[in-house]
Structures are given as C-alpha cells and as structure tokens.
Amino acid sequence: MRAFLTEDLIWELIRVSLGFIMLWAFLDKLLGLGFATSKEGSWLEGVSPTAGFLKFGAEGPFSPLFQSFSGSLVIDLLFMAGLFLVGASLILGIGIKIAGYAGALMTFLIYLSLFPPENNPIIDEHIIYIILFLGLANTQKGRKYSFSKQWATLDLVKKYPILV
Image 1 (cartoon, one colour):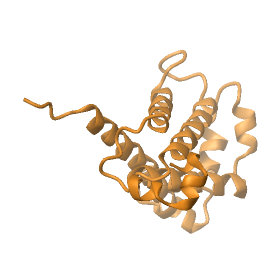
Image 2: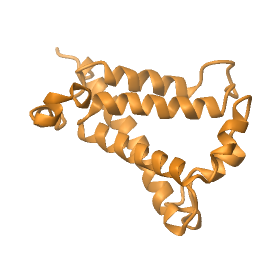
Image 3: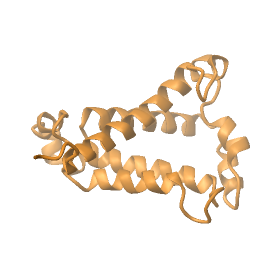
Image 4: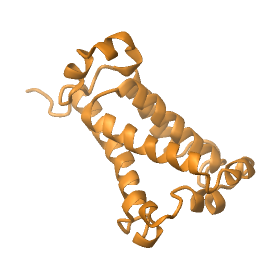
C-alpha cells in the first residue's frame, strides 16, 4: 500500500502553506480584513503597514535600529512587495528558489526585531519558517502541482537560474 503523505506531497503542502501565510499577510495589511489589521488600519486607508510593529512591537537589543525604520515608505514598499511576491511565487510554484531565500531573509529580519524570542532563548516559529523557506529554495520537491515546468522553459529563467 502506497503512503498518502509522500515526501513530495509534504513539500507541496509546505510550499503552498507558506505562500498562503505570506499572501494573507499582504492582503490583510493592504485591505484591513479584520484579522491582524483593522479596515481603518489598512494600507489603503493610508496607514503604514510596518509602522505599528516597528515602533511598538520591536524589542530587544536591535529594537532601536528597527524602530528607526518605522513609517518609512521604502520599508513599507519593500515589505509589502516581499509579502506579495514571495506568497504568490510559492503558491504558483514559480521562482521558488528566490522566493525561498527572500522569505527566509524577511523572516530573519522579523526574528531579529523580536530577539530574543519570548518563550525560548534561541528558537521560535520564525526559525522554523526560515528552515522551511531555505528547504524550499534548495529542493526540487513539492513542485508537481505548480507552474514550475512552464516557468522553467522561459528564456529569462534559463538565463538566470536563481529564478527557477
């Protein structure tokens, strides 16, 4: 009897789940869906998607650095573009390598802004996410139900393998 949860299916679920986490965060901050962001606090209402967290949420030895970024348009654009592009890339299964590295970098920066973790001196969910992002960037598993084969045939992707 063949196992239902194959290694490939597990990576497939990790890819889509992490993509959904990132894309959902983008949509919630953009539209104010009422989960982490109220409608009045949305980017479309003119509120910085990073200001509240960077100004009041960052803590620990790196907090002054992160607090200095609070309300910066450049930081807001990079953060929102990162959430959208990483999320969409992972869900569609295109550009997984670069999306994995970008997702790991974004998550590492969030980890640093909260360092040290609240419930463990070193490891929290951010480290697990980083490992999963790096795992996706470095494996070909989990791409069966995606557009990765079509994506890989594009001349730009052939020229720049980081885009695979």
